[in-house]
Length: 81
Image 1 (cartoon, helix red, strand yellow):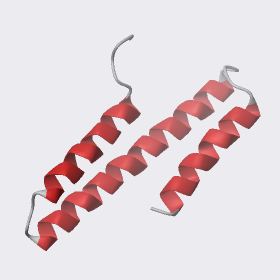
Image 2 (cartoon, rainbow, N blue to C red):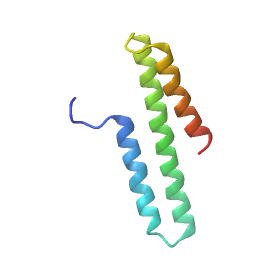
Image 3 (cartoon, rainbow, N blue to C red):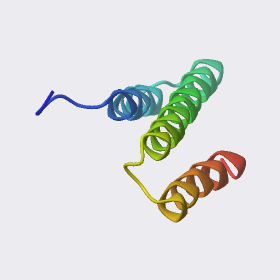
């Protein structure tokens, strides 16, 4: 649907919102918890993007190198987070 954010974009927005809330918290445990949940949302967004790229490859929409490049970026981002 045009104009609607993708699932991955919504997860990334939620992560950004949680990090913003975490900055206002003085309690260390609350801040760490919010940042941890934000990181989980980022990983979920990466998973959605990787699954989407695989589906597009299976449907012939992308070439294999494009899909592998996208999946590799998502993996590297997750691995070094």
